[in-house]
Image (cartoon, rainbow, N blue to C red; front, side, top):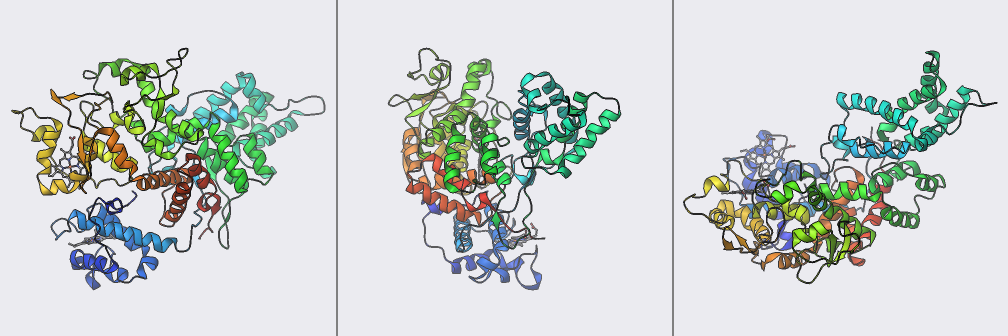
Length: 619
Ligand code: HEC
Ligand code: HEC
């Protein structure tokens, strides 16, 4: 979880916190259990009592702020700091650790060894064999790790179920490919003929197929085990083609195919990634699949580390259809809209149009994905994600919004980039039903969930997890008096403990109350006019979505930093370290210089130190 203090955006009175105050904080709340011989849990205040320790002891510092941020330390029953003091401590320490870590500039990360996740696996099979089969769903889902994405090395282990499925798919895919002209020609680049004995043909086939499957040049030693598979099949009486397909199957279940493995760096010091590994990093980042011929050619020519080549390449790759996979994977995880239709299903009785109209559901789900991709392809500013004059429209969405859209008369059902009329209230991500539905309950809106969603997905300052045993709104409210959600929440915020969190969460969500749980506009809730007034803990007041977006844009640094952080974590397929924050800071500075142009984000990530370099492997 990114730890960025609310102080940074002026939610809290920023009385300057200092190193001395951090020490007072630790003495007041932690010393009892974490000093001297009696120190418990392996955490000793003596290790973190100097300025220098911010550099030399970043690990215990880091775990201290994590435990404090999550409200785990000090443990229940001990004198505890107020939330405000807690966040000041966390915010100051995080900032101090970062600036110390950044003094030496961006650094390279570890080499990658990880399994293709299920979407990458399916896309790679598709591109390698030129077959169109939707096999992703049949594989077990991958959990999220790192910065919250399912491509993080930390979580991509192989279970027995995976091995079984891979065998099954390899057979299925090769059988299928053998029947299709296009994929046959991808495999059978030569046939045995006069002057080319079958075994030699098999060798040539493997020699051409294997570098594409392994995404790197291969040696005779790489080919040998698969040629042995061919030999074994022939020895069992198989004909040429089935014997070759047997060997191909072997390739599809081998680690060289299933894993992305970057050659280790024996050192000394960091070094540029080898061209093939870099080609894979780029193509799995922007296409979610293996490098194509163009990328392989550039890698072979040794040009892939040239920043100018990389920038041009990024633009070309983004405008290719394949970047849709990237947009889908990134957007749905960043915004959590992947949960729609899975964990989050709007109630069918309350929202029959949504439940029965599959086309509408598809349009709703794809709107943020296509919008995000279009912003990238058109190199629009990232701030358009907060508010924009355009959106992705279809005739279904037009009806859902109850706003007339200038759709192409000949293709009204097709998703398209449309200009929004004045006052549509549909600009940016916050006007999208997918986002509004995923931050609601199935049967009603929740300003709390929406506020928490904005804090997390947009601002990157997620609220601390709620304490256990909080009664639900329904149980707590007095059924005798029908109340709106706002009235019920106001009661909670009269309690100081609850208010410490809810005064900063709920205000953001209230401004979105004009959208119902599936994102339709409404002027009334429970028979009363919707009160869409919101307020931040610092007293900033606003009404409705347009003013909320304005308020968020006034805090655009937080949004841009959050998005950069997530995108870098996604691109690297791992959680970010303290040192990576320097790269994030540098990219944010570039974005500012470039009017927040969206392609700048992707280009700067691809040319960055952690993306292009690997550190020495420490044994
Ligand atoms: C009442 C005693 C008590 C107080 C007060 C207390 N802790 Fe702890 N702390 C523990 C115990 C017991 C553990 C070991 C169990 C655990 O990890 O939860 C622990 C573990 C930790 C760890 C884990 C070390 C690691 O490497 O994971 C950190 C960090 C920590 N405490 C920080 C703090 C900080 C910071 C404070 C003050 C804000 C604090 N603690 C206050 C009892 C205390
Ligand atoms: C440490 C921060 C924190 C504190 C303190 C806190 N909450 Fe929450 N609360 C949250 C978060 C975060 C959520 C959203 C949970 C989610 O994402 O599912 C939440 C959700 C809720 C909800 C569900 C909202 C809905 O629409 O149904 C209610 C009700 C609630 N809290 C009431 C309370 C009450 C009452 C107190 C005080 C006794 C309290 N909370 C204290 C953080 C907090």
